[in-house]
Length: 390
Image (cartoon, rainbow, N blue to C red; front, side, top):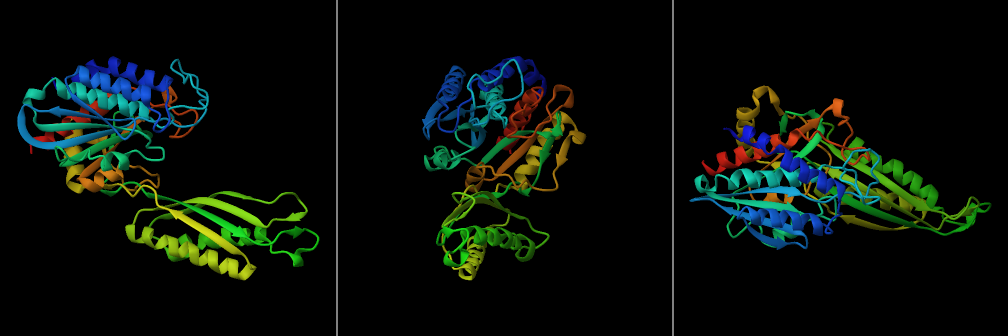
Protein backbone atom coordinates (compact mmCIF):
# COMPACT_ATOMS: atom_id res chain seq x y z
CA UNK A 1 0.00 0.00 0.00
CA UNK A 2 1.43 3.37 -0.98
CA UNK A 3 1.22 6.57 1.05
CA UNK A 4 -1.74 7.99 -0.84
CA UNK A 5 -3.82 4.85 -0.40
CA UNK A 6 -3.10 4.80 3.34
CA UNK A 7 -3.81 8.51 3.66
CA UNK A 8 -7.19 8.07 2.00
CA UNK A 9 -8.00 5.34 4.49
CA UNK A 10 -7.32 7.86 7.26
CA UNK A 11 -9.14 10.76 5.59
CA UNK A 12 -12.23 10.78 7.80
CA UNK A 13 -10.14 11.00 10.98
CA UNK A 14 -8.26 14.07 9.84
CA UNK A 15 -11.24 15.74 8.20
CA UNK A 16 -12.85 15.50 11.64
CA UNK A 17 -9.84 17.21 13.22
CA UNK A 18 -9.98 19.94 10.57
CA UNK A 19 -13.66 20.58 11.15
CA UNK A 20 -13.17 20.72 14.90
CA UNK A 21 -10.39 23.30 14.49
CA UNK A 22 -12.53 25.23 12.02
CA UNK A 23 -15.39 25.37 14.50
CA UNK A 24 -13.08 26.59 17.28
CA UNK A 25 -10.77 29.18 15.64
CA UNK A 26 -8.07 30.84 17.73
CA UNK A 27 -6.02 33.90 16.83
CA UNK A 28 -2.23 34.19 16.90
CA UNK A 29 -0.62 33.16 20.21
CA UNK A 30 -4.08 32.27 21.54
CA UNK A 31 -4.07 28.72 20.13
CA UNK A 32 -4.31 27.05 23.54
CA UNK A 33 -7.07 24.61 22.64
CA UNK A 34 -5.64 23.78 19.21
CA UNK A 35 -2.08 23.24 20.45
CA UNK A 36 -3.36 21.14 23.33
CA UNK A 37 -5.17 18.79 20.97
CA UNK A 38 -2.10 18.59 18.74
CA UNK A 39 0.28 17.85 21.61
CA UNK A 40 -1.98 15.18 23.06
CA UNK A 41 -2.34 13.50 19.67
CA UNK A 42 1.40 13.48 18.99
CA UNK A 43 2.06 11.99 22.41
CA UNK A 44 -0.48 9.26 21.69
CA UNK A 45 1.66 8.31 18.68
CA UNK A 46 4.77 8.01 20.83
CA UNK A 47 6.26 11.25 19.52
CA UNK A 48 8.33 13.42 21.86
CA UNK A 49 6.58 16.77 22.42
CA UNK A 50 8.01 20.16 23.41
CA UNK A 51 6.06 23.39 23.86
CA UNK A 52 7.75 26.58 22.59
CA UNK A 53 6.91 30.15 21.58
CA UNK A 54 3.86 30.41 23.86
CA UNK A 55 1.50 28.12 21.95
CA UNK A 56 3.87 26.39 19.53
CA UNK A 57 4.28 22.62 19.52
CA UNK A 58 7.30 20.64 18.33
CA UNK A 59 7.09 16.89 17.87
CA UNK A 60 10.18 14.73 17.38
CA UNK A 61 9.86 11.32 15.76
CA UNK A 62 13.07 9.35 16.06
CA UNK A 63 13.46 6.81 13.29
CA UNK A 64 14.72 3.30 13.83
CA UNK A 65 17.94 3.97 11.95
CA UNK A 66 20.50 6.80 12.16
CA UNK A 67 20.32 9.58 9.59
CA UNK A 68 19.50 13.20 8.89
CA UNK A 69 16.66 15.31 10.28
CA UNK A 70 13.85 16.91 8.32
CA UNK A 71 11.27 19.35 9.69
CA UNK A 72 7.67 19.75 8.54
CA UNK A 73 5.67 22.85 9.41
CA UNK A 74 1.99 23.71 9.78
CA UNK A 75 0.48 26.97 11.05
CA UNK A 76 -2.46 26.85 13.46
CA UNK A 77 -3.93 30.35 13.80
CA UNK A 78 -7.17 31.79 12.48
CA UNK A 79 -8.14 35.31 11.40
CA UNK A 80 -10.30 38.04 12.90
CA UNK A 81 -12.84 37.77 10.08
CA UNK A 82 -16.58 37.14 10.58
CA UNK A 83 -17.56 33.93 8.81
CA UNK A 84 -20.24 34.36 6.14
CA UNK A 85 -20.50 30.93 4.57
CA UNK A 86 -22.90 28.45 6.10
CA UNK A 87 -21.23 25.09 6.75
CA UNK A 88 -22.07 22.50 9.43
CA UNK A 89 -18.74 23.21 11.14
CA UNK A 90 -19.09 26.99 11.12
CA UNK A 91 -17.09 28.99 13.66
CA UNK A 92 -18.73 29.27 17.06
CA UNK A 93 -16.67 32.38 17.88
CA UNK A 94 -18.15 35.55 16.33
CA UNK A 95 -15.63 37.58 14.37
CA UNK A 96 -13.11 34.75 14.08
CA UNK A 97 -12.72 32.12 11.38
CA UNK A 98 -10.19 29.91 9.66
CA UNK A 99 -10.23 31.93 6.46
CA UNK A 100 -6.83 30.79 5.19
CA UNK A 101 -6.79 27.01 5.61
CA UNK A 102 -4.58 26.75 8.67
CA UNK A 103 -7.09 24.34 10.18
CA UNK A 104 -6.37 22.10 7.20
CA UNK A 105 -2.60 22.54 7.51
CA UNK A 106 -2.75 21.45 11.15
CA UNK A 107 -4.89 18.40 10.37
CA UNK A 108 -2.63 17.45 7.45
CA UNK A 109 0.53 17.57 9.54
CA UNK A 110 -1.13 15.52 12.27
CA UNK A 111 -1.93 13.03 9.51
CA UNK A 112 1.69 12.98 8.35
CA UNK A 113 2.73 12.24 11.93
CA UNK A 114 0.33 9.30 11.91
CA UNK A 115 1.59 7.95 8.59
CA UNK A 116 5.25 8.18 9.56
CA UNK A 117 4.79 6.89 13.11
CA UNK A 118 3.33 3.70 11.64
CA UNK A 119 6.67 2.97 9.92
CA UNK A 120 9.09 4.70 12.29
CA UNK A 121 11.31 1.62 12.65
CA UNK A 122 12.05 1.82 8.93
CA UNK A 123 12.86 5.55 8.92
CA UNK A 124 16.54 6.58 8.74
CA UNK A 125 16.93 9.72 10.80
CA UNK A 126 14.43 12.01 12.49
CA UNK A 127 11.32 13.98 11.64
CA UNK A 128 10.40 17.16 13.47
CA UNK A 129 6.84 18.45 13.34
CA UNK A 130 6.50 22.21 13.78
CA UNK A 131 2.99 23.35 14.73
CA UNK A 132 3.41 27.10 14.58
CA UNK A 133 1.30 29.88 16.07
CA UNK A 134 0.57 33.34 14.73
CA UNK A 135 1.49 33.10 11.04
CA UNK A 136 -1.15 35.73 10.28
CA UNK A 137 0.56 38.04 12.77
CA UNK A 138 2.55 39.00 14.65
CA UNK A 139 4.54 35.96 13.49
CA UNK A 140 5.32 32.69 15.22
CA UNK A 141 8.05 31.23 13.03
CA UNK A 142 10.84 33.54 14.16
CA UNK A 143 10.14 32.97 17.88
CA UNK A 144 10.25 29.23 17.22
CA UNK A 145 13.59 29.55 15.43
CA UNK A 146 14.89 31.70 18.28
CA UNK A 147 13.73 29.02 20.73
CA UNK A 148 16.10 26.57 19.00
CA UNK A 149 13.72 24.33 17.07
CA UNK A 150 16.17 24.04 14.16
CA UNK A 151 18.73 22.36 16.45
CA UNK A 152 18.95 19.36 18.79
CA UNK A 153 18.89 17.56 16.44
CA UNK A 154 20.02 19.91 13.67
CA UNK A 155 17.46 20.27 10.88
CA UNK A 156 18.91 19.46 7.43
CA UNK A 157 15.81 20.33 5.40
CA UNK A 158 12.37 21.82 5.96
CA UNK A 159 9.04 21.49 4.14
CA UNK A 160 5.60 23.03 4.35
CA UNK A 161 2.50 23.60 2.28
CA UNK A 162 -0.46 25.92 1.85
CA UNK A 163 -3.91 25.00 0.59
CA UNK A 164 -5.43 27.19 -2.08
CA UNK A 165 -8.35 27.27 -4.48
CA UNK A 166 -6.30 28.60 -7.39
CA UNK A 167 -5.31 24.99 -8.16
CA UNK A 168 -7.90 22.20 -8.40
CA UNK A 169 -8.01 19.40 -5.89
CA UNK A 170 -5.57 16.69 -6.91
CA UNK A 171 -2.79 19.01 -8.01
CA UNK A 172 0.40 20.22 -6.36
CA UNK A 173 2.19 23.44 -7.33
CA UNK A 174 5.90 24.15 -6.88
CA UNK A 175 8.28 26.97 -7.65
CA UNK A 176 12.05 27.15 -7.20
CA UNK A 177 13.52 30.41 -5.94
CA UNK A 178 11.37 33.23 -4.49
CA UNK A 179 7.80 32.05 -3.98
CA UNK A 180 6.40 34.80 -1.75
CA UNK A 181 7.16 38.41 -1.02
CA UNK A 182 8.92 40.18 1.78
CA UNK A 183 6.21 42.01 3.72
CA UNK A 184 7.08 45.31 5.34
CA UNK A 185 4.86 47.92 7.01
CA UNK A 186 5.08 51.70 6.86
CA UNK A 187 3.61 54.51 8.93
CA UNK A 188 3.83 58.16 7.89
CA UNK A 189 2.65 61.08 10.02
CA UNK A 190 2.54 64.51 8.35
CA UNK A 191 2.32 67.54 10.64
CA UNK A 192 1.44 71.04 9.52
CA UNK A 193 -0.60 73.88 10.98
CA UNK A 194 -4.33 73.72 11.42
CA UNK A 195 -6.72 76.55 10.78
CA UNK A 196 -10.02 77.69 9.33
CA UNK A 197 -10.86 76.32 5.90
CA UNK A 198 -11.77 79.81 4.73
CA UNK A 199 -8.24 81.12 5.39
CA UNK A 200 -5.82 78.52 3.97
CA UNK A 201 -2.97 81.00 3.71
CA UNK A 202 -2.73 81.05 7.49
CA UNK A 203 -2.34 77.26 7.70
CA UNK A 204 -0.16 74.39 6.48
CA UNK A 205 -2.55 71.89 4.93
CA UNK A 206 -1.57 68.28 5.56
CA UNK A 207 -4.53 66.94 3.57
CA UNK A 208 -3.13 68.51 0.39
CA UNK A 209 0.35 67.28 1.22
CA UNK A 210 -0.95 63.74 1.81
CA UNK A 211 -2.71 63.78 -1.56
CA UNK A 212 0.51 64.65 -3.37
CA UNK A 213 2.43 62.09 -1.33
CA UNK A 214 0.03 59.27 -2.22
CA UNK A 215 0.42 59.95 -5.92
CA UNK A 216 4.18 60.52 -5.79
CA UNK A 217 4.86 57.28 -3.93
CA UNK A 218 3.45 55.26 -6.81
CA UNK A 219 6.34 56.45 -8.97
CA UNK A 220 8.69 54.27 -6.90
CA UNK A 221 7.27 51.15 -8.56
CA UNK A 222 6.49 52.71 -11.93
CA UNK A 223 9.76 54.61 -12.36
CA UNK A 224 12.43 53.20 -10.02
CA UNK A 225 11.89 49.41 -10.13
CA UNK A 226 12.87 47.27 -13.12
CA UNK A 227 9.65 46.59 -15.06
CA UNK A 228 10.64 42.91 -15.14
CA UNK A 229 10.97 42.91 -11.36
CA UNK A 230 8.23 43.03 -8.76
CA UNK A 231 7.31 45.43 -5.99
CA UNK A 232 4.13 46.77 -4.43
CA UNK A 233 3.62 49.95 -2.42
CA UNK A 234 0.09 50.12 -1.05
CA UNK A 235 -1.21 52.79 1.30
CA UNK A 236 -4.11 51.16 3.08
CA UNK A 237 -5.26 53.84 5.51
CA UNK A 238 -5.34 57.63 5.67
CA UNK A 239 -6.65 59.44 8.71
CA UNK A 240 -6.81 63.17 9.32
CA UNK A 241 -9.13 66.09 9.73
CA UNK A 242 -11.97 67.07 12.03
CA UNK A 243 -14.75 68.59 9.93
CA UNK A 244 -15.45 70.00 6.48
CA UNK A 245 -14.33 73.58 7.13
CA UNK A 246 -11.20 72.94 9.20
CA UNK A 247 -7.69 72.49 7.81
CA UNK A 248 -6.11 69.43 9.43
CA UNK A 249 -2.85 69.94 11.27
CA UNK A 250 -1.95 66.25 11.01
CA UNK A 251 -2.54 63.23 8.74
CA UNK A 252 -1.46 59.65 9.37
CA UNK A 253 -1.01 57.10 6.56
CA UNK A 254 -0.18 53.40 6.88
CA UNK A 255 0.65 50.87 4.22
CA UNK A 256 2.49 47.78 3.11
CA UNK A 257 5.55 47.26 0.94
CA UNK A 258 6.01 43.94 -0.88
CA UNK A 259 9.24 42.91 -2.61
CA UNK A 260 10.90 39.75 -3.92
CA UNK A 261 14.49 40.89 -4.44
CA UNK A 262 16.49 41.46 -1.20
CA UNK A 263 18.37 44.37 -2.82
CA UNK A 264 15.13 46.07 -3.84
CA UNK A 265 13.78 45.52 -0.33
CA UNK A 266 16.86 47.04 1.26
CA UNK A 267 16.51 50.19 -0.87
CA UNK A 268 12.81 50.79 -0.21
CA UNK A 269 13.09 52.77 3.07
CA UNK A 270 15.40 55.35 1.47
CA UNK A 271 13.27 55.62 -1.66
CA UNK A 272 10.09 56.19 0.31
CA UNK A 273 11.62 58.66 2.75
CA UNK A 274 13.19 60.66 -0.08
CA UNK A 275 9.73 61.26 -1.55
CA UNK A 276 8.19 62.03 1.86
CA UNK A 277 10.95 64.56 2.53
CA UNK A 278 10.53 66.20 -0.86
CA UNK A 279 6.75 66.53 -0.49
CA UNK A 280 7.09 67.93 3.00
CA UNK A 281 9.65 70.50 1.86
CA UNK A 282 7.31 71.52 -0.95
CA UNK A 283 4.26 71.88 1.31
CA UNK A 284 6.05 73.11 4.47
CA UNK A 285 5.21 70.06 6.58
CA UNK A 286 7.27 68.00 8.97
CA UNK A 287 7.05 64.23 9.07
CA UNK A 288 7.55 61.06 11.08
CA UNK A 289 8.38 57.91 9.12
CA UNK A 290 8.44 54.37 10.53
CA UNK A 291 9.49 51.42 8.37
CA UNK A 292 8.98 48.02 10.02
CA UNK A 293 10.43 44.98 8.34
CA UNK A 294 8.10 42.00 8.33
CA UNK A 295 8.50 38.50 6.95
CA UNK A 296 11.28 37.95 4.40
CA UNK A 297 10.61 36.32 1.05
CA UNK A 298 10.29 32.54 0.99
CA UNK A 299 13.17 31.19 -1.11
CA UNK A 300 12.60 27.60 -2.22
CA UNK A 301 15.77 25.53 -2.59
CA UNK A 302 15.91 24.08 -6.15
CA UNK A 303 17.08 20.64 -4.97
CA UNK A 304 14.27 20.47 -2.41
CA UNK A 305 11.77 21.49 -5.08
CA UNK A 306 13.03 18.70 -7.36
CA UNK A 307 12.77 16.18 -4.54
CA UNK A 308 9.20 17.16 -3.65
CA UNK A 309 8.23 17.24 -7.33
CA UNK A 310 9.38 13.65 -7.88
CA UNK A 311 7.56 12.45 -4.78
CA UNK A 312 4.35 14.17 -5.87
CA UNK A 313 4.62 12.88 -9.43
CA UNK A 314 5.03 9.34 -8.15
CA UNK A 315 1.81 9.61 -6.15
CA UNK A 316 -0.34 11.86 -8.33
CA UNK A 317 1.06 11.51 -11.84
CA UNK A 318 3.18 14.04 -13.71
CA UNK A 319 0.15 15.87 -15.12
CA UNK A 320 -0.98 16.82 -11.62
CA UNK A 321 2.30 18.39 -10.53
CA UNK A 322 2.62 21.96 -11.78
CA UNK A 323 5.64 24.24 -11.91
CA UNK A 324 4.31 27.68 -11.00
CA UNK A 325 5.69 30.50 -13.13
CA UNK A 326 5.21 33.49 -10.84
CA UNK A 327 5.63 34.00 -7.11
CA UNK A 328 2.89 35.35 -4.88
CA UNK A 329 3.18 38.88 -3.49
CA UNK A 330 1.57 37.60 -0.31
CA UNK A 331 3.67 37.01 2.79
CA UNK A 332 4.56 33.78 4.58
CA UNK A 333 6.76 33.40 7.65
CA UNK A 334 7.82 29.88 6.67
CA UNK A 335 10.65 32.01 5.25
CA UNK A 336 12.41 32.04 8.63
CA UNK A 337 12.69 28.24 8.66
CA UNK A 338 13.87 28.22 5.03
CA UNK A 339 16.61 30.71 5.94
CA UNK A 340 18.10 28.16 8.35
CA UNK A 341 17.89 25.02 6.18
CA UNK A 342 17.13 24.19 2.53
CA UNK A 343 13.37 24.41 2.21
CA UNK A 344 10.41 23.89 -0.05
CA UNK A 345 6.93 25.36 0.37
CA UNK A 346 4.28 23.58 -1.69
CA UNK A 347 0.91 24.77 -2.92
CA UNK A 348 -1.79 22.19 -2.35
CA UNK A 349 -4.67 22.42 -4.80
CA UNK A 350 -8.03 22.49 -3.01
CA UNK A 351 -10.32 24.31 -5.41
CA UNK A 352 -13.66 22.74 -6.33
CA UNK A 353 -16.54 24.83 -7.71
CA UNK A 354 -19.01 21.99 -7.10
CA UNK A 355 -18.32 22.32 -3.37
CA UNK A 356 -18.25 26.14 -3.50
CA UNK A 357 -14.53 26.06 -2.78
CA UNK A 358 -13.76 29.06 -4.96
CA UNK A 359 -13.16 31.98 -2.58
CA UNK A 360 -9.58 33.14 -2.01
CA UNK A 361 -7.83 33.13 1.33
CA UNK A 362 -8.93 35.83 3.82
CA UNK A 363 -12.40 35.93 2.25
CA UNK A 364 -15.28 35.51 4.75
CA UNK A 365 -16.66 32.69 2.58
CA UNK A 366 -13.35 30.84 2.24
CA UNK A 367 -13.50 27.06 2.27
CA UNK A 368 -11.37 24.35 0.70
CA UNK A 369 -12.06 20.88 -0.66
CA UNK A 370 -11.31 18.41 2.14
CA UNK A 371 -10.38 15.75 -0.42
CA UNK A 372 -7.06 17.63 -0.55
CA UNK A 373 -6.23 16.59 3.03
CA UNK A 374 -5.04 13.02 2.26
CA UNK A 375 -3.16 14.33 -0.78
CA UNK A 376 -1.24 16.80 1.36
CA UNK A 377 -0.58 14.10 3.96
CA UNK A 378 0.75 11.64 1.40
CA UNK A 379 2.94 14.07 -0.54
CA UNK A 380 4.61 15.44 2.59
CA UNK A 381 5.17 11.96 3.99
CA UNK A 382 6.55 10.64 0.70
CA UNK A 383 8.88 13.60 0.24
CA UNK A 384 10.06 13.22 3.84
CA UNK A 385 11.06 9.61 3.26
CA UNK A 386 12.79 10.52 0.00
CA UNK A 387 14.80 13.21 1.79
CA UNK A 388 15.87 10.95 4.63
CA UNK A 389 16.83 8.08 2.32
CA UNK A 390 19.20 10.24 0.25
